[in-house]
Image (cartoon, rainbow, N blue to C red):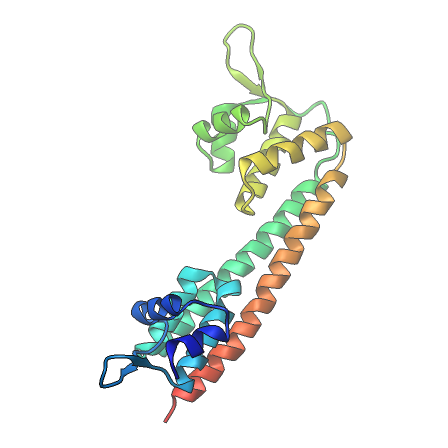
Length: 227
């Protein structure tokens, strides 16, 4: 099988096939007497496994998995897969935490005390510089004490900070979070976030199913490697 034959099946270039072999994603190819690479059905199975792993695990992890398998370090490959599943589970828990935070967006009782940037940052495990950065990005709008100039965070400000913190953990960028929080303030509820949360759920589900497909193709490749 020529490099072009392997490439055509997946719409790749022959250079991509050579790069994958060089990176260890594919086992080393045999050479003809004239120095041309020749590939086998085993290489085709390795390529299918790698491309199936990509959507669920990402390029770096998928590459590391295939490198480990091709080096005979199957246990290392399985550990990488377990770690990737662990990250997906963490992301699901983060989403649950975001949804829990959104359920707390009801009007805050007036008797709750205001706080300053230092205690708030410490409570959330953040740096004060991070809160100042979020303020600059429009995520939170604390008032200033007229005498000291210190930032004063109301209960509603704390709510916005907590929500921003959760969304950042969920992978959202500051420029994505700012309009969401602004909409929540303007709308007085969490309805504007429903679309974003639904999209987040869909992306996690797609990633989980992609991991299943990748596992099936990788298992087929492992079976083909056995004598």
